[in-house]
Image (cartoon, rainbow, N blue to C red; front, top):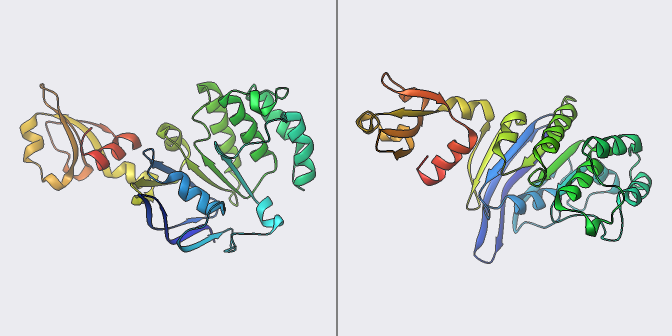
Length: 280
């Protein structure tokens, strides 16, 4: 069963155009979305969640294609976004009281445990929290009602390294359940390398690549070699290059690796940069 299906989704905002977005994600999988600022990541996530309506195309989430969705269906979905926070005048304890009456599956002890682990702030009003502490509160609330689908848009960007590592561990625990599905949009590609099963590269409103993470990482290598050696390759196999004066650093297809090259595995960030800009 697919937990998420987007079919021919398009959305225009002024000069920006999210174009013909089609992909599906199996239940129990983790999707990492990578793209520059303005690539359309947040717009796509909002369409997926039913926060905004696409100009064209279809959306199905957990088998439901009605974007209005019933309260029961909405309770099966958790999300964390910078733009969707809690009321300014309420603090973490207030939100716990409200949410335990909102979600049948709310786990108060789990909420408090997560806040303690992340060194979150339960006392200050939401308005007065730092961005990092706001995200800790939102993440704790999201995980505490144990939804079947979690969607996070740049949720770890404002966290310190220790808190970010704890969140990744929590998400790993969450996805051990084969019925739980996770969608993560993040600039921190290192986090996605640790947890994602699939990667979607989004560039200027279009899907540049959508494939299993391991398949993408296996397809490319980062090499250092004499400039002449890189120039002799089939240039279709050279995705990005940078001449250093002492040779050339390049991202190439794994099949093109040959003697005379220093070869290492490429990161998702290096692959995305080379695909988009042609440089490393």
